[in-house]
Length: 319
Length: 319
Image (cartoon, rainbow over all chains, first blue to last red; front, top):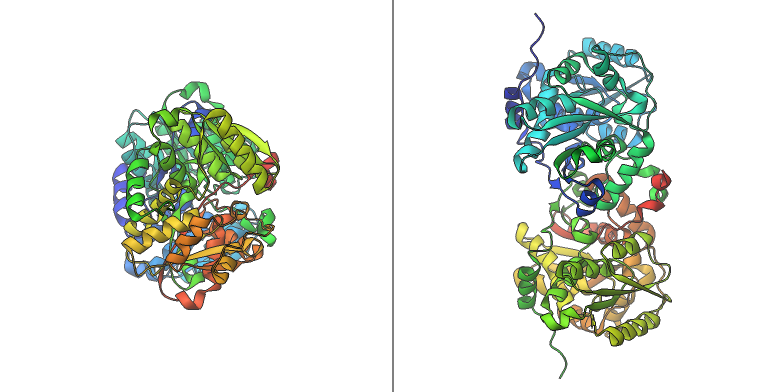
């Protein structure tokens, strides 16, 4: 029998479990961006989450859901960055070991975060196969529990808490946009929206250069054979099987966005919200801006997923 | 008889007057920055204020304090940027005309803000004399009221509301740091701290290349003869006479900071707070970091004054 998919009950349990550790991030508004978009935008500011991204929600939920004995053997994951840092910090909040398998060439700011929170880094070749095999090896050697970045039951439930806070903080929204990489955030969002705001449709935003989710939903089966090519380093993962099932069940639509449009949206967000939003987050605003006519005058939520920009790559990085 | 200086009563009146228009901005914390500084930092996030800086508080207070007939003739000011944008937006909230005299070569992002809010721009040469004479000319021609960026009574009182919110939001602080340009923010801060938190000392942070305030306080009289040389474009103004009196009365100390230290602090703020803080704001953290030993273990407030960075100057600005 297949493992059951996460439910809204799991999201509520996650919200209670992570409350002592995670921030309830603010919802930001901008009149200038509302004018630009022709609708009322409500930005959930997850760059202000601990470790700089929504990923802490899922990681924290997974870490604190472990039984004490199992937790004591630690946790392990493979992650291009934000989930690794989030799991490292979550493990630190519980005082347990954390191992993170990181692909060579990953974003330096994200690697620094992981190290700062005290996890052990295990470098590997930048392929899914290399990551998974090294993670399995570490797991066998240490007895650590594998916390997959986006297919893990408790991770998906934890990610749903961002939408829960956003929908509770606002009046009714007619749509909710999130980025899509492996599908953890949007799966949790879809489960939550269906339960607390059935009139609110959930949309994903995916880079043209990693559009496996849009193609998978169109084809009716997962399309896993692609080489990602996008500046959105947080969205290069492949949609998970369980995530695919959840998106189909909730009739989630996904828009694809060029990197140029994503960068343009990022510039607007920096300028108007004064928030250091990473490209993998700005893509959600870019998708909405592509669909201005469809959402004209409506109230739309956008989950700004993270802010782990490599600050040292900016002009004043060498100061 | 000289005009009386603003009092805490004026700050309280300002708080009530601007409440319908201004944001009560959040206070942000960062464990990483606390470790770096060796104390407990409380950041008042004025980049999230309307028009992107604390300047909206003073401008809004001044605009709404005008009698109806006088207000109808509009307002005028000279400003390198943030005060101009703030006054333009404040005038827009009251539906009155606004004229802004801007020095050639001013920060493009700030000029765009002023224009966006519907003010009339009047370019002039980048000297104090040229600004003041053109502002006087516009004032004569239109009957508009001059709202000086930092010596105006209601502007100083309005700027004090940021510290009021910060001190009310937190437990006791032993010190409060703000940047110093013309002295509007730190004057309002000093008046407020003296009234609501007499144990809390107020410190200013000033660029080495525009250190007229530190020199004025040391000499016991205003030192106005200098040519500013700093990347902190919001701090190039000359300390006002009334501001000087207030700082002396409240025994405010001012630290001078190199641009390199300011940029380093800015990088930390971007990385840890995910907030787009401009150099003229980051200088306050830089000053605190210079004084680590003195404030070790204490609770310290820092007013991050604004976030109007010229985003188009960043690498992805051309995307």
